[in-house]
Length: 147
Length: 220
Image (cartoon, rainbow over all chains, first blue to last red; front, side):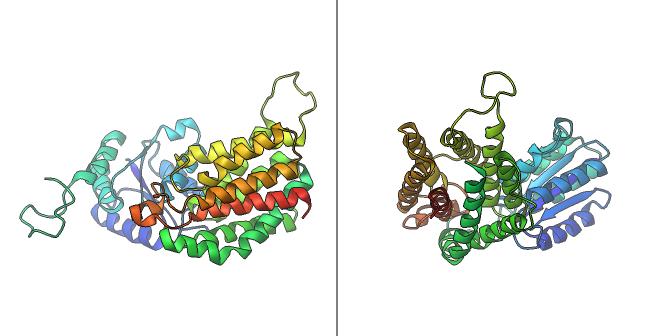
């Protein structure tokens, strides 16, 4: 089964997100890398590297979808990926989807037995998925997502 | 860069970062997430600890640069640690890269020529990892002109110290030049036009590191 790796600035945030994911898809392995090695807010490419390796092991070689938050997370993730051998990197798909919605959506897809590309695609798809219902009262500035 | 200049530079850089910790953090609070000075100071403290404990600093320059980069990458926790760390690592790797001639031949380049290669590799690595270029209100606005000034100075026969001073001056001017720029990279880009009127903290810290190099190379 595809596993997830969640990357971000806060361990607390990612621990909580992992709980949310487990509620929706308890069978899916989720590795997290949040905060610095010293437990502060920030990102750590060695920590991300470890999480990616843990997720790969848990997926039994099927593959890992990675979701990440803002700022330096993408940069630290890129460095962590570069440290992996090509054969492992080929099993990792990084999603550009939103962290929370993408993680829950991807986990449900993974639990259904979907392959790597499909799990990543549904997480990516959350970028364009409207969260407000179509009949939500108008707001100043209009809606961010076109329907 | 010779061993002692390199170690002296790392020590001076660590001291300069510690001194500027509050200032850098203040600059970052204005347009980012307010942790640049704290993060960089944490990284350089760890780097200095490794120097003090002999875990770093005794090997050839390439190994010292690689180890310095690793210390920053593992402890800084922000984009700046990854970027500076990668810069140090690639500077070290560039010193080891093949340069023609018979294998195993002694390195006959001057320390200035080797420094040009290392500096260039660092700036290229930072630009590549950050997917950034000059004019985007980042450390590259200090580093790119500094590299050009350094190469020009070495090309006209300047010593390492003199070339590093020119690089530091160019970096300081480049950092000042970030004030009117709109940030398009990093957390500051969330502010859009509101980032205008502020110094980029990464450009300021880059200038600070190069001023420390100039001081180390001239023995100040």
